[in-house]
Amino acid sequence: QKEVEQDPGPLSVPEGAIVSLNCTYSNSAFQYFMWYRQYSRKGPELLMYTYSSGNKEDGRFTAQVDKSSKYISLFIRDSQPSDSATYLCAMSVGSGNTPLVFGKGTRLSVIA
Amino acid sequence: SAVISQKPSRDICQRGTSLTIQCQVDSQVTMMFWYRQQPGQSLTLIATANQGSEATYESGFVIDKFPISRPNLTFSTLTVSNMSPEDSSIYLCSVGVGDQPQHFGDGTRLSIL
Image 1 (spheres, rainbow over the protein chains, first blue to last red):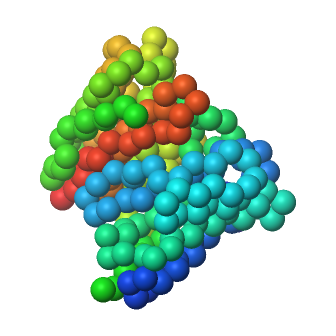
Image 2 (cartoon, each protein chain N blue to C red):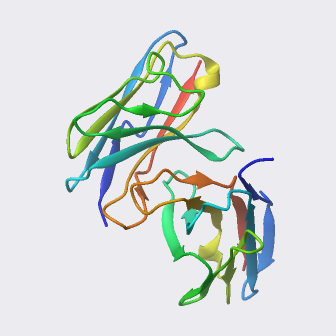
């Protein structure tokens, strides 16, 4: 079993839809949870950052962490064609200077 | 957040040769990380580079194949040595500043013929 599991998709939705992206993990020591967005030919861009369990909202994006279930989610409301990208979940046992463990990424297409 | 520049952005190399990838940060950082992103695979950590000490390599990666230099607090290089087609990948550097999550450069896209 890989440490972080993420459905690679691809996922295709119509513009305006609510998108749900998920990851599961096996290492209960993970404390920091991140979502990165990666456009083609670009590096991963930090989207959301959460410490421990709970929800965090930023505009159209909501990140949820359920440590008891070892499950994290990213919701995108009112999805736009510009949201078309690969979304990577990542997690670590410590903060910034600790190595990250990534999921494979989910490729999302939002169709106008 | 730190601005990270990687060079080259892409390259096509012959098997058996070596390529050195540069990573420059616009601020001083203690730790720099090198990851590999193979097609259809997760980003995988190659090594952690701490200024003033030897890099720490992850299981499956060795210094002879991926030597790393960290001469100062804003710069690091990763060399991919004696390349084979299996080394075709995207190589990314990242930095974490204090408690902030890591930020990435745009990567080096490497193809081996």
